[in-house]
Image 1 (cartoon, helix red, strand yellow):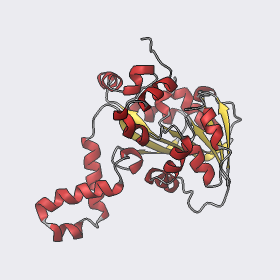
Image 2 (tube, one colour; image 1 turned 90 degrees about the vertical axis):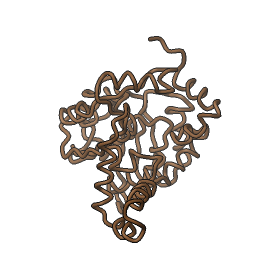
Image 3 (cartoon, one colour; image 1 turned 120 degrees about the vertical axis):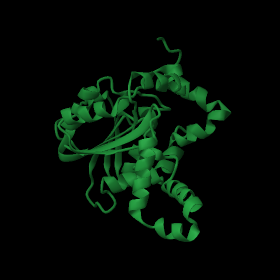
Length: 283
């Protein structure tokens, strides 16, 4: 199938449609990427990323690879914590690619951002270069998932961390077709994809990653954003209140196992094409 537009042209179209204004903001696709980067830096999602990567009390400057950096929102967030960020993307766009990320490098005062044009399947870095490889909604764009993840493993230091977030998951080829047929930007420029959960995990194992932790759609706010943790807890409260009343629920709602069970229930019930999963693992 031949597509009419580039990704940048598709995004310009979407920004021009008032009905998509909320989606543009939620996807951090603002015209001003510094505004988007600051919003991401202060988000509940990035706070959870900091927790998972144990960056909160880290005084050491880490070398972080932001793979598939797009307009640089995560690069800015990591650099603002004082880390040395290498932002990689195959797109040089001044709006949605390395040009946009490069602009952010001039407004970061703690750490640093450098940009490199490359595909995941052929990273131009020496073995064992990075402490962390971070990829937000990037794995499903790899032309070869297995080769791309093998490169991620190669450039990570021993015991380095890979955090891949918000990856589209499908159950089968029928769900893949449904997902692509209903993806707004994919209809304009192509480039979207999704894999089965089994395929993601197989590719991670093949790349010699270990201690693979998989986060289902409602296990973590990273996946269920823009619904917040408070929103999920509120849903649980409302559901139980109808059955048990306010007094009992006000006690039960404080028990972590109850919320964990509820999140597991929501994740098991979540089977739509393109549902979001995240992965954290060690080299």
